[in-house]
Length: 94
Image 1: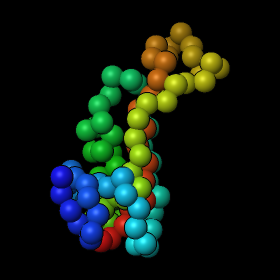
Image 2: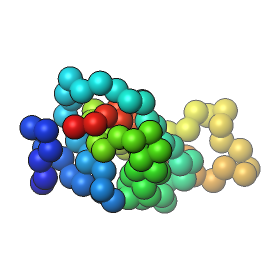
Image 3: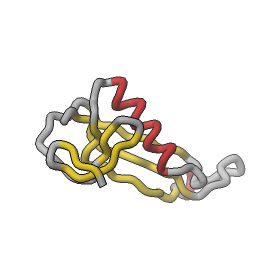
Image 4: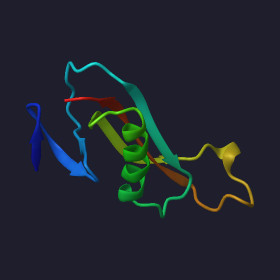
């Protein structure tokens, strides 16, 4: 467990991820979704790191992640997985 700006979390490819909240100004709300359940959390974080870097942020706070079930109407012969990975949070500078 790492710490930055009084928050506990972890670094991933140079960007700090924390599930905790803080008063830092939001540079951008970030979210990533991949419509395959065999996608990894590391891959979701990689997508979020790229977006955070593109706006000059060094951290993502209020980080939430997990899997969500697809709606019944989203299931087709071409969509085999019933769930999707997601990650969301606020890009900030700590």
